[in-house]
Image 1 (cartoon, rainbow, N blue to C red):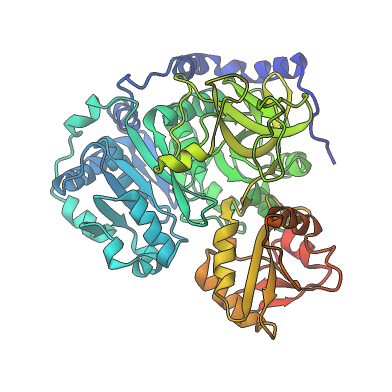
Image 2 (tube, rainbow, N blue to C red):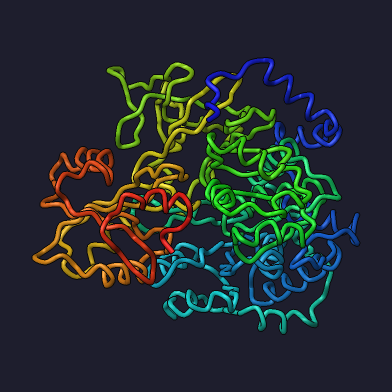
Length: 588
């Protein structure tokens, strides 16, 4: 197993400079956009896309099942969709809710919304019932555009949660058929400070929060990650199987594609067994990943298509250090561009210099500081924070300034909860990432762990309070504590709950059915531990930490269940279960 680097030196940087030499001209074009960004500048995603369409109308922009649609044709359809939205009163600052699985229409509706100066509210199609209603309430949308593939989610939405204007894809296409194909006049007038996206992320309230992304912040991805790190060329095609409501697809992938004037090959959803076949079908030269995706690909039986592709670069986050080299060697991926970021965070790290098994480099101001077990920054006797020595794990915080503002959440009170004021001196401000990292030199970090009341599983943030709320409503349950636990060979943390019951233990299949009905599949806990009592006093948080540390192995005589899947529900814990999870054999 290759170790995580403990130090980045000048030699590592020089090696990286050598590999990027062929791309230096294009990098020089994008570097000013990262350093000299201004919210007042007339620069938006819609303007960038419209210019590419004007300059290269015949170049492929979207590939779907191997078939290409050009920048010019996509731009004409985007403008038709924008005319439909404008006809329904959508203008600058309004929100369009978009509920869709990946498809060309999904991406074109997003671009149409942005061209009007409106905000694309990217709904997670895994949400149901009161959760999707809550998300809709945060959006306060002028219109909702939805994909018939997401009918279950749409049908679970209360009628009162829907805006005045609701169109599914067929109705949108019918309305757009006769509309003009010219760019909306407003597009050219929009400054970079215009809001672009609301992207949902789990919060400690147990219900989703909508993080805000302006065009200006998206442009940092476009220039920094896309232009300087990924470095696609116009002949490249990036394969995207992650959902477009995910920042990896919406910001990182789209930014890289537009930065290179390249093509985006969309897949409706990720399939480990079809992954390389679809890459070959779409003639892709790049793809985007999360750590789970890479692990699932390694768990597949070897086959010829593992190397019968043309992939030369992969961009994503969560690649585990212990599988990094194996992944590179088995699949022949020339360059892995790992990055670290979050929807609400005002900076990102990216592996510009190609230092293996790191989350990369960031030129913006940050600190790695001492922390408390509950995920807060630790203050000393003077009320100030203290940085940890390089190489030691600490809480990552990012400086907030006029140069590096925080877009935060739609709810300003939620944003303020993440801001640390008077951290090192009076009147300074930092944003709490909630994550543990190690700084290893030359502004590089390695990711360590996630803190606080959320954990990450299947590439999604899971709020413990949302899980607790669902478990608490199951028959016979009197109390619940939820937390994330490590499973060897897996990325992120798997869900586990400690449960007390009134009388008899619930039926395991009925219990699982209830949780699948109440939660997205990725949030259904894999482990259930039945305990005699739960401390709910002021020491409750300490007990939660203790339960998390005990996980599913140090449980004494307590009964533990594990999730086999929708068909079988929960079954008694068995020794091979963690390895089954790592091999993607459970839950099924």
